Amino acid sequence: MKQIIFLDIDGTLTEAGSNVPPESALRAIHKAQKRGHYVFLCTGRNYEMLRSLLAYGFDGMIASAGGYVECRGELIYDCPMTEKQKKTALEVLERNGVFCTVECRDGSYVDESFKLFLRENIDKGRNRELLAWREQVEKSLNILPMSQYRGQPVYKIVTMSALESQLEEPVRVLEQDFALCIQNRNQYGFINAEFVNRSFDKGRAVKRVCEHLGIPVENSIAIGDSMNDKEMLLTAGRGICMANGSEEIKKLADEVCPSVREDGIWHAFQKHHLL
Image (cartoon, helix red, strand yellow):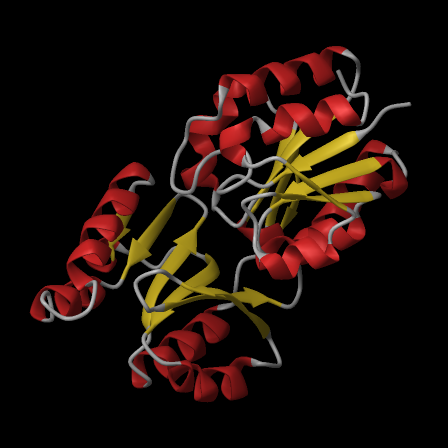
């Protein structure tokens, strides 16, 4: 019986911000494919951010949290924001002092004022560490400054804010078209969140891929680690959370596998006889 396996990237296939999966995960993926199973990336990352991972031979991808879907080289879904949606979202976020990264198909562009704010407040809290972390992530994922943005279609807006109250007006203004997913209050004290178009999510993307390949959704497995994997894990026939995942998503998953540092993908594939 053919299965489709959907893998989140950050915190699942790789450590967060990395583009290099553990060797055990790659062996598991290739063994499963040799047995006739399909393996897809299913991520909040845009196409550009995951491009280097495609060299490992996946059968397709769900990018931008479901806004862009390819199956065996064929584009089967493409849903960027409208210009009106983008303009409204960026205006209300800026008005509330929320720092933004806009994610397009072929690039991501970050508000330079976030790092400027950190530099101006370098000795407060853990801003020095956060600045170093941001610079490392932007380099590894090739995130560019907003000054280089040239109006390309936007699929998703990622935000960083110091206070939840800064998100109150944006949620009111945008709630008809966008769902807010608060990833976490990160270790540096900032709230990391995403505004995702209500026209799609990872769960509906899983259904699109299954329908396209003619495989029942019950014959699918999804593996993730955070709240932006919620719909994917609830839609697939079996939802698996990494041991390093959030406690909230563990409660929603069917089971928990070892962490990304403990060969979690390999153990999950082995347990479900995919190898």
